[in-house]
Length: 293
Image 1: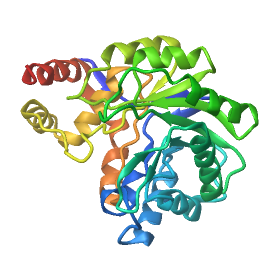
Image 2: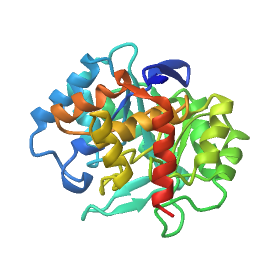
Image 3: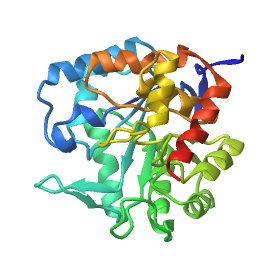
Image 4: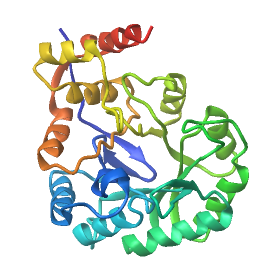
């Protein structure tokens, strides 16, 4: 039986990164708002991730707000030469913790400068334009030309090395690519939520990284009887198996599971070295899809 060891690298901008990265969202307080209960523990998790070989960290200045970027700076600055920090712009936080759109060109420019200041950087490695349209949390069609052009101008000014997109449709990806190169797309995608299967494959053919957010279900952990059953049979946790499935799903998938726990971090970082039968990983995807009807 063929096994699948999911370690490896993929190109993100002009650098190769390990496919298992780290997402910093959970380092902020409850609801991704305010400071963490234990800032020293958050700093320890960041340092442990980089010491274990993580060289791709995902963040945003609207986590906290400002909190996660400040923690990253405190924990890791001056940054290792091979570390790629990816941030996103397009929202701000209300005084009550609400997530508010901030999509005007002036808002995006302000957000880029906030990220530069809080991360203590002269240039941002990758900036994702997070699209917020209407009242739906998911992607909605609509032109993003003005917004992406605003970020492309900041890239031309030398403040950003590479551009990406988040929460977008296939048409919006194509529209952005006519304006400037897109090095990654970050959408909601996991073993259960697979509406973007065709887009994942299209971007793989183009050599563009796919970075799923909520790879383990987000604020509501993945629920699947098939996942739980197969994890028990393989001797791994359901969340490890869900991450392994993503790494096996397509070569361009880069993972950024977040945690504020050293134990969970260790469990996540073990996933690329797991030897799992590839045919069973692929069959798991079919079984979970069948559960959804």
